[in-house]
Length: 339
Image (cartoon, rainbow, N blue to C red; front, side, top):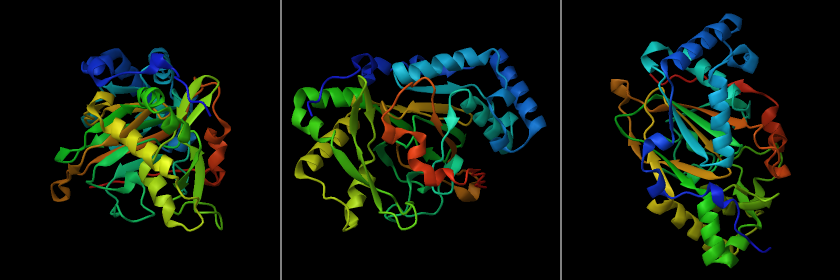
């Protein structure tokens, strides 16, 4: 296909976002008290997040600001950081409910794995990075390369940091796509063809161990990006998987190099209580390496949401929530504690 420039209004460069206040939403005292009241109302109904919907977590004032955040995620910069929640004020279960309640005002939860987790954990789960069934949220310590998750939006709430490192990183997929179109249209076009992704052992029983998706999609004049380089490379371990073409390998290498270029990404500190939301289709994310001190009770631990946003009226059918129907069969919330 003929690749073309898409959504230039959503492009950014790191130099334009050096001022963190541009992408940080600091909650004021009234909004924090409204969150606390919503938390108490939700807990009166149930301590199980799966039983709490948007109507059970009323935010009459803050909901308008969250709607603006949602619009910015889909039609603007593609990421934001919410700051102000006092981690010391709440225990872990209360933090999870706060996070869940905020998330319900931004979208509908989406299962993240074969266990049906709609509320997930990102922490060291003792899985080796070279284990072909390991997923990124289970790996401790190692840096994670830029990638996209499997939903419209991904959210991360920081419960606790390790002793050093672990900065979040976000890269602008729109700028990277458009530069590829301009400088190497043949590489951009190749990434519009379906590419194989490893299922990491989470396919349906008896199903093939890989799935195919284009890295770039042009859908009703909008750009949709899905790129998980380690999963694409790992797919080649299966004899049944289609082989990556030389041009696809070259294009993927160039995309990764652009994401790693400081011009196209920014680093973000997530303090306990901070929440990050990202548009998966316009922004890739990763993290720097980090160190825990388990014996001292300092273990990096984040909660994760995958959300389907109503702000995005239309999407390619292969990015619909039902595309992972076997993950939807058993919805649950992961409630891992790390200390």
